[in-house]
Length: 417
Image 1 (cartoon, rainbow, N blue to C red):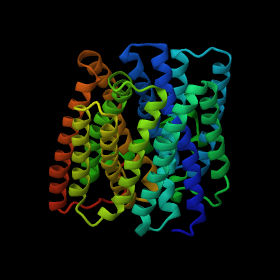
Image 2: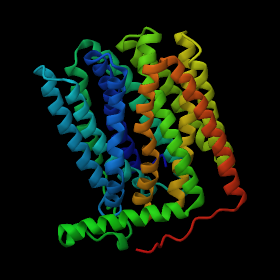
Image 3: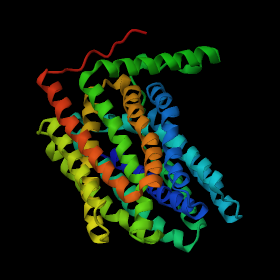
Image 4: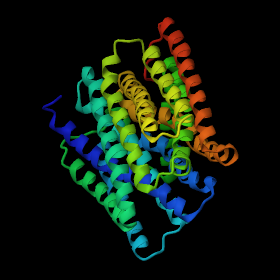
């Protein structure tokens, strides 16, 4: 895999776009804290960031199984570059308000939902089956370093200089991603049976074809017992993770007394821990899936509980590293399992269906996090999130262990129309 030039280019493109995501994820909530003091409106940024995944993830998966997956990614990265540039103009002319923060977050997240489906389906086309865990680990590590380490740290520093600068870097990152990805040669379309264009007939027929394609993917996913269990557990993981992330910015600024730069730097140890989790995950492949992912989630939950019980920043930093390591062990192992299990001609749709179920919990988690933080405070909310995460990890060990004992196997890819 070391000599795999197309995969390396995909890593570079992923790193560039993830860097922009990291800047945006730290700058948008910080902008919200300057525009309002209401925790519900601040965490609303996270709600808006996740809602488009419920609207566009499934159509994105269907399109990824019909059209060239790489070209879809290039077009959407270019779209995000244009949206980012427009937001720079708003900031430079002093027209940024909470509504514009929400709108740009909505547009960026909408494009991200489409990109996720096409990028997920690209990896098995670029690496051998035996390299999926390693490739997944490299992809996750690249995203972590860019999105969770460099992006937030640099974004927090640039935010103290001026609003226009981090927004301009954010827009540029997507332009770079599109420019690199377009140099990857080859066709990245799914199996021929799934390649008919939706636009071959009337708009009504195109809509029916799209709906049928989405339904086929969801039906296939629901018939796979292990994948179905993972998807349901991931919904719980998405909920508790977004509760944690949406409240962390309030905890960092109010309870720990950190400014924008300090909050950005607090994400550095979390990114290091996530990178460590991505490195460790492929080495856990020989363990039962239930043990590896369930144990990792319990580590994450315990770290969250301990974070809620301290105000010492260095201790919080170490615990954030443990928290993130557990999350990314889950990510790498479950993604590789899906890529290995799902047939190529359905990889976009089924992966999108899986992520759709996961995404159901995320806006709900952000909303609950804001309500709880307003009612009982950020510290108590983080403690409750830690307990809930431990419950999800325990459930993963029990449910996935039972599935393995039953000798669950993937079913055929054919489903009734």
